Length: 507
Ligand code: SAH
Ligand code: SF4
Ligand code: F3S
Picture 1 (spheres, helix red, strand yellow):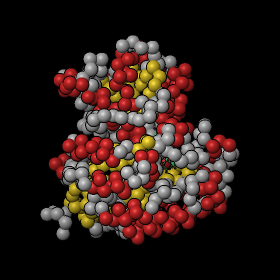
Picture 2 (cartoon, rainbow, N blue to C red):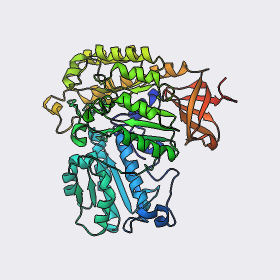
Picture 3 (cartoon, protein in one colour):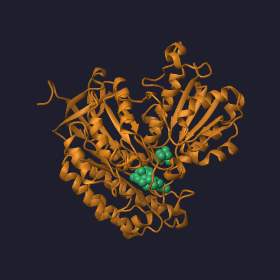
């Protein structure tokens, strides 16, 4: 699955591969190289008899269609892709690892920075020739760009068949059927639906044992640089029972770790009534799901994080993992005010202190924007100092990208590109050093690692995640995938830990 790590890596980046994930990202490693596009858990899974495989839900206009799905953007987009793939799979579609073999190519898109959009425009332009050669080949654009730029995409790329916004994804199959039935194209579906309900669909995941699960869609904040409230709409939470039911389906499908997703996960449930649903209640309910071994949640907002969350994390620490993704964006109060983030550096620091008091093990990942409108050298130095002071496990660092429709467009984008680049690099270098120091401190310790599967570069080794979400490589066979394995750490880079399994379990 193609995602982002670089400028196309936006929202929350729950799985920064150590601090260097950020570093690598900004140095141009595209996640298309790291993870397959969505073609099923083990490459091509094109069924010989898709109708039989899909069972009663198979639809003649979809069954047998070879699909390739490319995801840009954040984990929420990944979740959406996995659910849409699940939906298409239920209707009998198959998935192919190679875009050239696809009869339906789907782009799940992101608008968070200019480059994310440019990459999709580039790919759509490139497809014009193929489409004129093969009119039966279908192109669909879904997600945040579809929502925000749907009309323009339809005008600029009239050969696109289907455009589906963020609030109509659950209708993807029926929209595809309409296209196949001969509806005029591009078929545009970008109205606001109140709820996105995927019914009982089980996500078709990239990872067999780890799953994303969106619990709140949209965002009620208005950070001045950010396009997400406009692409995803207002906050809408799913009732705890729904989330738990989906978690149970995932566990039945082999999942042992779930990452709960929300733009500001701390406000989960506020729209349903805080007494009925809130993050700590949700964590307790998830904790009770039999067979589920690990729970994570992202993204935390420093203004919203309350003490009861850290208490809950500490109480439920056997299953709720000690990892928090809490973007700071800047260490300067002046910049934070201009961003309308709603907290000061002092407040951020207090939240971290509180978290560490209740959960000494907790590791914190951060996002930063450099070169925001009016960011002076002194403002930037405040970010450097804050990064040094808090010592994050990892950071994603982004150069400010002005977005149409956001309040910051009224401010001047006055930091020159080369200054943005230099500031970006300085934070990357600092984070890399901190990540390396922190990872080295783990050498000699035994970590519980959820083995995800064979390493992509060396099949005799396994890749997994520690409790703190550090990437760990260790020798082992595929039979360990999905198991939590004690691993003694023998080496560290800024990106990952290396280790050996501890025979006979923990010593
Ligand atoms: N909801 C999350 C993250 C939102 S977007 C939060 O509030 O923390 C993911 C990250 O992309 C942000 O944390 C921010 O660092 C970055 N980002 C968002 N808009 C941006 C823009 N216009 N330019 C550069 N980076 C941006
Ligand atoms: Fe964007 Fe701010 Fe909402 Fe995060 S909290 S999605 S940065 S508006
Ligand atoms: Fe995610 Fe990008 Fe949309 S960050 S919410 S896919 S704009």
